Length: 180
Image (cartoon, rainbow, N blue to C red):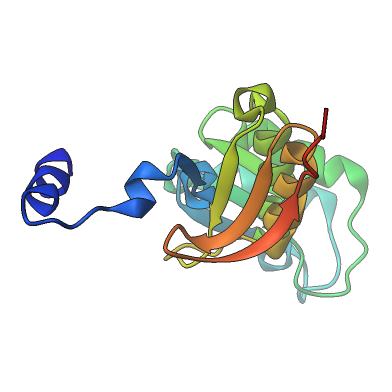
């Protein structure tokens, strides 16, 4: 990029975006690194509705858990069956040694929790008095919640927060200048 900027300067063009001091924060950088897999309890219920303890335990015991190796496993029940709490515990006892992570809920719910944990743990003070653009377009399904939450994390520190790309932004927040 520096070579491009130097070449542009040689012909009289200035990259104002590069010189603006704007920091771009891409929320896709926080996206989980592992693939998702779904464990549907329904598949281990009698007629998809009734949990028979002996049959359920036997089915889990004989399951090839290696298919969940290094995956984020979402444990759901896609029917309206009543699942006892111990069943989730039993499933977890098998997954804990193979899965990268587990969550009882949907991918959307998992991503909300994941982004909340990841973003609340960033060092927001590093953005003190900075102009920040939260990158908008991407290829991963970053939940809208993450965009709202990063705003609350950065607002106490940032000079300004914008959304989009450095060359075309939507202003979100700008700290008033203090006149002395």
